[in-house]
Length: 283
Image: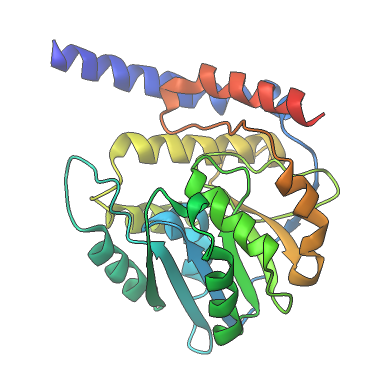
């Protein structure tokens, strides 16, 4: 019976991936905004990446981090929590995996050690992020989007917006939820490099499994097909200067409690329904 269920799940995942990158693209285009698109110019020399949990730096910015591996560039990955609230069946130590991930990327990994799953109830979060940025003085801050699926991700975004580091360009990433900014904002993106991202995710056995990776890749390819008519892997960012973060404070503060999520491709119907609900709420 278990073998039959596994086969059924795989078939359902395959169908969901096919649908969302094929016939479902027309529905996605109606439900996603149409902001101006720009190729990302990753020319910064000093970058700070905010990862609420180990593995978020890869899901959100894996392709960008690969491209920042250059001798004259400095990259710091700040793991806000150690991810102790979750581990996959395979087990493993998420903090050790994060240390290995940062090392492989040529980045400095630092750990703030805040409580996993409790960042929305951590009043000092905004000051800690701002103090860290002020110490590092980055040209760019890479951080989660206010509408991403996990409450810890949203809490990090809100904290950074409330206490912005104005000197840096800010790039908001998504993981298992699509970016849903207003059309007035700029959406920058990178394409290609899928194999390197998959290799990086393979280092996170404590929190990542094959179904999760398949759902993530399906979502990214489906968005690329909807926006660019190209089903290759892409990595989108909402790009805003630190001095202009006040422009999204109202949007962030009034974000509805609707965060469309696709962690398994077979849940495509529910994902599209959530996306439709969000579209109706933000009109």
